[in-house]
Amino acid sequence: MECKQKDNRSRCNCSYEPCVRKGVCCECLRYHLRSRELPACCFPDQAERTYDRTFAHFARLAASGAI
Image (cartoon, rainbow, N blue to C red):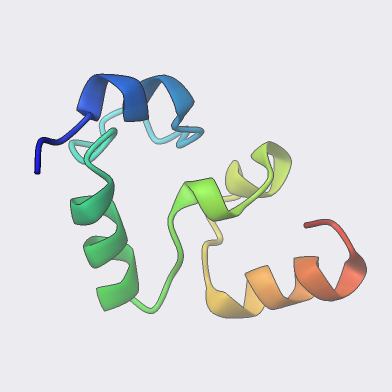
C-alpha cells in the first residue's frame, strides 16, 4: 500500500510545526497511542492548539458536545 503523505498533509491540522510525522498517519497514530494520546486530527482546531491530546481531554470535549 502506498502512503498518500502529500494528500494527508493537506488535511492535517497538527499545529506542531517541527513534527516529522505530518502526513504519515500510521506513524503519527502509533506515536500518540504509545503515549496514551490521540493525534491532532481527532480534535477541533481550537482544542488541538492546546497540545493536550489525552484521552481525558477528548472525553471532556465529547461530553460537552464540542466534537
